[in-house]
Image: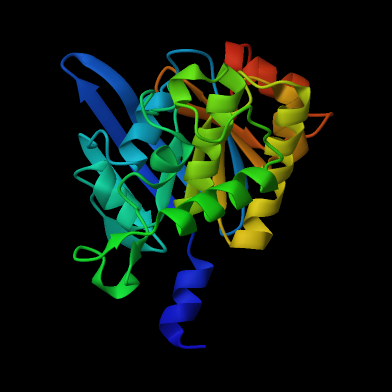
Length: 261
């Protein structure tokens, strides 16, 4: 292994240093520091308005930081758009899912990442619809998602089915960091269990680090290696999520206590 490879592996896959974000007079992020390790599942917790959504939108290139620094594998990066973040292998599933209701499953999964033949002449080739449908079926079967019609428009599906399609799309194209914003909020018990199992498998099976935003403390305890708690735009604590620390996490979220971070 080269010195560069050792350095890359020892550095956090994602690091945020002293990040601030202003929207006019409103300070949405106030000196946020955060590290995401390789093959780690990090819980990002906080009440509504704590700054979680602003932070993940900065990580994914939707917003640009007012000040501060973001590093990938120890190297400074600056994302001007979500396309820049995707080039570094960062994908996200937001609460609004960002699906096209008038398109089917395959088109939603591969929009902007279409498979063509021949593969090496992507811009000049033609769509390989059979390959895309085969791969889409495989990915949804991995999540054990059962849909009434594979050809139906996404707009005709239930909230849980739409969520599953969005998760499958993000898992398909995230090569470094996957951000999941309340991924089980609209799912039934079986689909929730499948998504949680997928989150636990991602680090070792696909070498992906995960940031999970969730209000469900039981889910955080089950799948997360570490939890970072935000309040009023800043980080107020971080700890290992366990049954024993659940009460402390809740106290940090509501502002009853504060850790030194």
